[in-house]
Each structure stands twice: as structure tokens, then as C-alpha cells.
Image: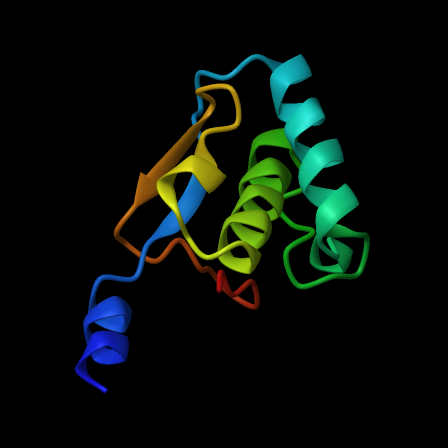
Length: 96
């Protein structure tokens, strides 16, 4: 019904804050990837490049966020996540 269309029109994604400490980012990857498959950020995966911690963390955090219903609290990650309204997908890497 109309509720589904409204939700799609207001689609959001979860990204890692660039100011986040590397230890926090690594902890976020570990947590997210223990709950969802992070194969897309493994070598050869569509989101492996750019091969850096911030990029990989954002992909992992968004996978977790999407899998858990896209609630703001699913992107908190000890205040290191931010909900964005513009699609961060790039090249072969699709953010769902």
C-alpha cells in the first residue's frame, strides 16, 4: 500500500562518520559482519575498492542497518554512524 511507497521515497542509508577513530571503525565492522554477510567488502567483492577502513566500515554498517529495518538506532554504533538521504552507491558497489 501507500506506506511502502512512502518508505521507499524516504530511503536512507547508514554511513560511518569520517571523524570516527579507527579502533571504533574496526569494532563496527566486526560487530556488523558478525550479524550480516560482508562478502561484498572482501577481496574481489563489488565494494572492496576503495580498499580503506572508512569505506569498508560504511558498507558493513549499512548492510547491518538495512537488515535490521533501517531504524535510526541501528546506525548509532556508539555515535560513529550517520543516516544519510542520498544514495552512496558507486560503480559496482550498490548500497541497499
